[in-house]
Image (cartoon, helix red, strand yellow):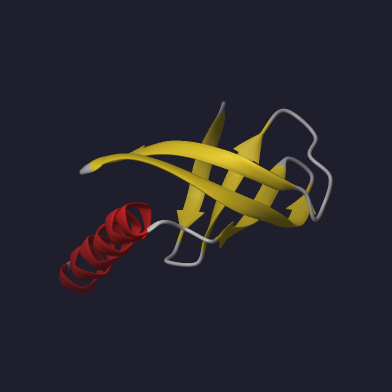
Length: 80
């Protein structure tokens, strides 16, 4: 379990209470407004309990959900 702090079409930053080695490939599962995403990701960076993950070989459904969510965030931030 963790708390996401940033998301993009290419990856996700998460606050975790466990340690994961850099360059480890993991499966992330998280919920977006349009559905649950299950995706493989590579641990690219770590700073204390904040981890940066890069999505690896996302399937088209997961990538579509992520892209749509990021697009909606951009629209919301541009109008706010």
